Image (cartoon, rainbow, N blue to C red; front, side, top):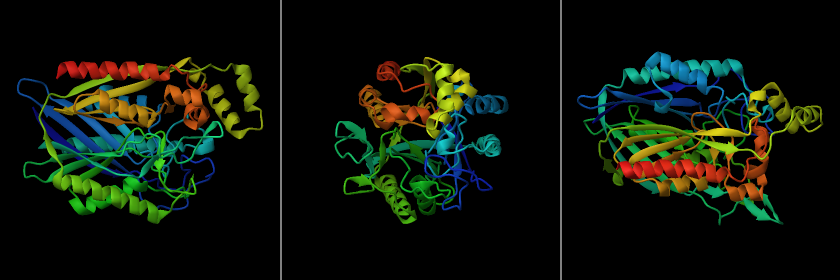
Length: 434
């Protein structure tokens, strides 16, 4: 089995000031650009004697997410242009809050979507894929290594009988940094992936910013050269945020903090690249797409929604109007898509279209053989995917966040069981196939 890789990079920074996504207190168009937004494209072609080539596309974009409503259009465009089926496409957002909203379901209270930008972004995505495919003419070998980084901290803490958003050093995080290197025949890197699990929410200025993942990628590009395309791969960071705190509370940082953390992450990636990599053997790729049905607690009726729409609470009014305008969202459950891709012997990725809390990412790493990289914010955005315990406890991830994602209600406690069933089944299949 020979793996060929083509890469491309496109600037997806908005050409004019438009709203940014992610913070309810930040309204209006952005005021400037600190770090431009990019989409980084990786096109793979796997060839084996006597078999038809297998192709796959990965796109890592400086976006809060890709919208669920975008994915049918993008998949159709990529199918028509290149013959790529959905299970061979992974589009991930780094989850920066310094970029524009892309989902029609995201509440306008945390960023109103600009339709012209979304259409342009989708056109650029197809163009970037074509550019990467044209350059997929060099065979690459794959190696992998791991390190550690300490930026993230658990952000759910119990105080006075309720869950609040404060630093919790006793809560789970995932400090592991996974580095994947794709080398040309002369040993030079054609691409580098670096996977880490933490919200890119150091700052909250009304400025375009690829945040610490973008700062790290910039440093790596300077160190590795322009022909090596470093791409940040976000993990399951739904309940993990940067540990900028004092006196037991979080605070937001500025540009200097973002640059410092990006440089520190890049330094750890470089350390692993220079001494901690091991070859990943060639293997036939695998592409599997599954879905877990995530149940809601209840589905509101039209009368209740109209009452909220006419009320004084802006957040509930925006949520109810979204559901009244899109009644197809009023279903008892929503699918969480899981896309599994094996790239090499002992190396795979599991991409999910939700804001997945870290507990699931850790479970995935334990369950699968070899190294399986868990990815949230990929191929759309369902909303927060909490654990059963978090649903019981409430708080933002477990109970309150649904209004910002155009969902009928918070999820039912059975959510963890439904996700675990699909994850564990996939893991058993891979264990039996190795």
